[in-house]
Image 1 (cartoon, helix red, strand yellow):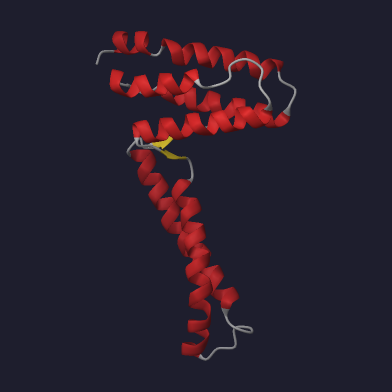
Image 2 (cartoon, rainbow, N blue to C red):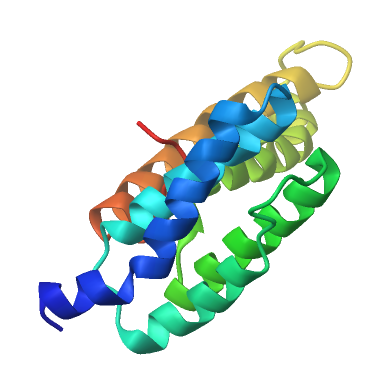
Length: 165
């Protein structure tokens, strides 16, 4: 698809971006401002992608469900989460830091199980059950693996950016 066609197709995204920018300027509520900034980051990311009509249609439908008029922070959070989920599913993207978060969770879980095993097999006095050392090792390994996978996802342009920087 050429860039002229793509520019015409992202008009709804640009209009939503402009509307959310004005809501951000008008809003004094911190939680709403965070959500507006996330939405602006996602919309910026979308405007920078070369999207087909098949990809744009569900995204535009999701934009229609965003409250671009004053809404409570609770309503705004719920609708923005639905919007971001729709975008991620439509474009097969992951959020920033996705694999790092998963790596940390699994690292802690496996580390907690690994600690007592290490204590029994090495015979070292690692505290009451060795769980602390296992969790520490699991955190480090999980962080390393998750960070590596996040870098690979960025290289493949599979990350949905939610920050405006």
